[in-house]
Image (cartoon, rainbow, N blue to C red; front, side, top):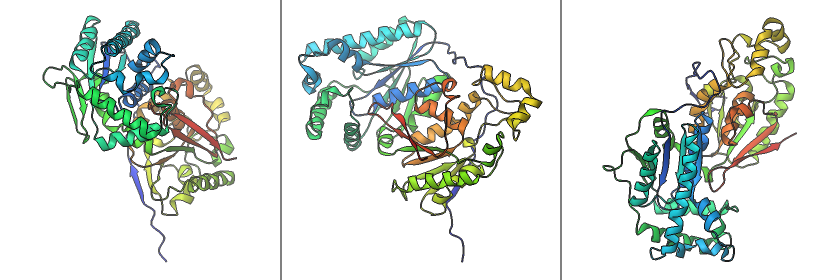
Length: 445
């Protein structure tokens, strides 16, 4: 009887061994204002927060300035409560509200200027840039401070806007004060009215008069102008992968491989098989994942090393989960230290532990990698995860997961390089309505 075919693809993402050699932030020639443009419901705040998180993760000094936060903090009226920022607030005839929104933008720009004055970086301005005069105000402000402006315009179909709204409503938190007291239908009715008010004065980014912009159309076509340099080119490759709809709909799960024979021997790297306890870890993980009832939907992404594949063999052998193997999910390359025990490492290379302990993020194993190299190597996986149109289970290794978790938990890799990554544990990335989200941890033992 022929064996059941297991659907597997190998994705060969090249590994970089020429990454930065220190943990310093990436230095830019000039400060940059990235400004989101679009009507409500287009995922602007989601994209703004994702851009900020991504740039910080790859070593670029970045900060997000949400104009809506300034509006609520400065002009929110406790006596009026949540009702102040309902659709009436956005009527063209509401001159007082227009002045308040302009003032809130001004406060955000002042704080962004202060942020950029301490050194070059990227200030992401989200909100209140739907009209041409407002965008001209931002450009003039940037030029006065010798900074560059890049506008990012986002468009969506009405159907997608409604889907995003419903998913965000389910994820509503204290930040969404204007709708916290309304039921779903009431909230969506008000939301559509707000869009109608703002649509009356909305102007698309002018491709002739605008110096630098990136536009993502409703059918996901990307157009751009004046985009060059490190940050601009990173945005061109990053933005098309972002989808508020996909992230709100599809969870992302992470697990570390089960205990390996090398774990028992306190040996570094290599390609060992699972120990008997590691096989039990795999059974626990597979039972947990099967309990999610995502057969035919969930994709299982592993490294190419035996221990990750064996950990989820119970899923792969069922033939109900698509399997992808990524070389870039392999454990950090320990170079000359591969396959050594920690005692052997101390005896043969005592200087390595000393140097690595002094700067674990930047130290590169001889003929191997550093955590900073991992950021470069893993970047394609981050893009694939953000672009995924189905739930994903990532099965990888301690150093790789530490680097991934820095992105998903909005922390620096310097901090997470010492993070505990226990086996027999499942992490689930839970998005928030603003695109930030957090990792939820479930121990299976």
